[in-house]
Length: 265
Image (cartoon, rainbow, N blue to C red; front, side, top):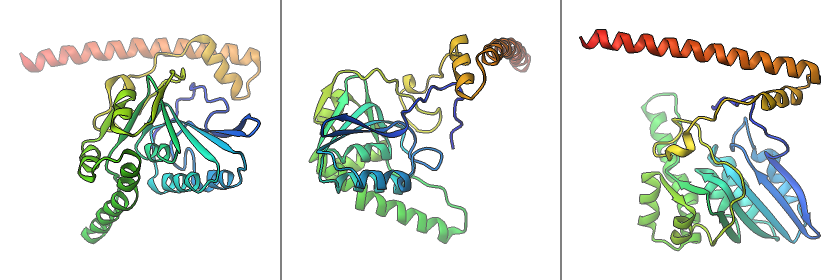
């Protein structure tokens, strides 16, 4: 489970529906597919109730729970409307499957798409672990591989190898491989993945965000319900605390460097 950044500006974009035309709706999937993010039990009924002629699905997600993702994918595939999937920044893991639900799939020129073998955690004896391994294999065969093959028209062996390798596709590569139909202009949304979450994530996607500015801190505190004056004072205090922590981190690094020299000498 990832820890949320309290200063990350979420706004209304998480899993939200909004009208985007006379006969169009736009669904934003801008979070993990998980109990702490977007859950199928909340989203699938909303998808099923849509009556628009076109549904745009805009995706920026690291992925998450396989079964929730499969349920969302199936709900979109069952829609009578035309579904246009837009990879705004990142469609990784099970979020890439959701993108495959589109009758048309567009990827932003600076976005990425990633596919890999599903994984899980089991607590129990050897038989329990074997059952989990069998379930993961069935999930790959019955759902993921079939969906990727249907969209890309690539051979099964190629899809399996890409999944085993945890393959990250740029926009150009995604179109070339058949995961997207065309490239669209950059959406102005930054892709990011939690450090250590995936084996081969590009370094630019795991780089830590810079320290929040005074304005960002104040805005986050205002969003949390503080008055303007209290938010302003809290933002100043927070920046001072960050500065103190930075000094402490620097001192610790210096100490570790000296210790390394002693160990080597």
